[in-house]
Amino acid sequence: QADNPGWPNATDHTQEAYPVDAEFTARWTRADAMQIQRISDPDAASGESSLPEQYTMPEIDNGFPTTSEDVWVWDTWTLTDDAANQLSYNGWEVIFALVADRHAGYTFDDRHTHARLGYFYRKAGTETSSSAGSAASNGEWIYGGHVFPDGATGAIFEDQAFTAQTEWSGSARLMDDNKIRLFYTSVAFYEGSDSDYGGGDDGGTGKPYDPRIVQSEGRIYADDQGVWFTGFRDQHELLVPDGHYYQSRIQNPNVNFRDPFTFRDQNNPADTTDYMVFEGNTAYVREPEYVEAAAAAGQNTELATCTAEDLGYDEGDPQAETVDEVNALGGRYQLANVGLARATNKAMTQWEYLPPLLSGNCVNDQTERPQIYFQDGKYYLFTISHRETYASGMMGPEGVYGFVGNGLRSDYEPLNDSTGIALGNPINLNFNPGKPYAPDWNQSPYTYQSYSHYVMPGGLVESFIDSIGGNHDATPVRGGSLAPTVRILISGSTSSVDRTYGDGGLGGFGHIPANLSRSNGGDV
Ligand code: FRU
Image 1 (tube, rainbow, N blue to C red):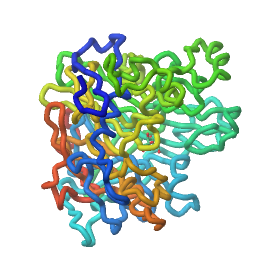
Image 2 (image 1 turned 120 degrees about the vertical axis):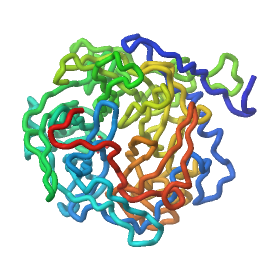
Image 3 (image 1 turned 45 degrees about the vertical axis):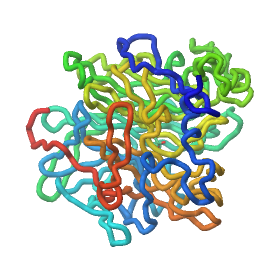
């Protein structure tokens, strides 16, 4: 029985909870992701969005304010506690962000191999607006500089001959008193690193880039002039991919492994374990030529392949693709997962892997900056993804995807009629996407308007501006500044964008408020 004539049914997900250490990984299936195309308007005109308005971010005017004249700003997060509450400290709101020098001669698109972790602060309670066309405030964030002393985050690499070394996303936990544990990704690139993020492409014979999840401890101080830190010198390496649950750089030199987010299970207060979700890939070997090295390292040697479970179609669904068809399309190259680990000591310097919470094998290659959001006794898994990282035959917007379940590990159901879209950029799925620096002629000019969305308490969502305009052969305006905050209303297995929030749905630029305050010496 087809629910929607002409389209396959989505996979039935029960939301049922499993023990955290169970060998059960929820699947974001091709049958699920196909629902995105089902709700896309096949008649949407050139330059228009083809997605329903309730799932899309309102359009951002290209006259946005610059967050910092010194640095481009992208992935951003706050000081949090174990429940992802956002804490001000001694009357200041504090954000951490990936930053790169605007004036060093490289382009915005080359920022990834120059990324440093920077911080900003502003008076708690600052309210700003994004009223269209006005000289809207940039959020009044004051740039505090880099978090880590120069050279500190590269010290963990045994091979110091890297050509670039960067600090990528993570999260920050304010502990007792003024102690901060900063979780982030340290990445080394080597001559001939075969990575989409740079370092050249020599067919994979170079030394693959090396992403590792790291923790560093520091202390925060504030007076009426501003905020500063001490510490952040010593780096504790926490995790490298094991090649069993999580694909290693041996199995795939372009592996995705990054973006740690730690929390405790707020629906189960008896469990005082510190958990971490992160961006990973399923631990298959990408190409036959990597099998030998994977075997030598004691890792999984199975070649990537798509299974009937990854496709997730109902038996006998006349609209279903076959496993052979999907494998012939190359679906096996896209192997996203959301990883789970748990701390085995109080200082959170030692971690053990658990099976992934979610896989998107043969659907998408990247489930980035994952986070767990608690509401009404449910677990919401939010993660960001790209139009361009979908597997062949699948597509969806840049933005936040959401999944809901009854446990931290559960048979997660994609929100919103199984589409999974919680907040997408406007995009026209009837046309090619193009690139952020050159969107397709027929695309919505807002296809790449913002990215790296993070869902904050109360359903507020912050992100950074990437690229606005540029269809119809115009040159896009590039971002590197904080986007207007928006709000999504989350309820059961649905969510929608609140267009009554702010100005037509757009709140202040970089409106990243604290919802709790902490002062010097206070407890968590
Ligand atoms: C998301 C992201 C993160 C990564 C960073 C690198 O925008 O791809 O996954 O940490 O950007 O710049």
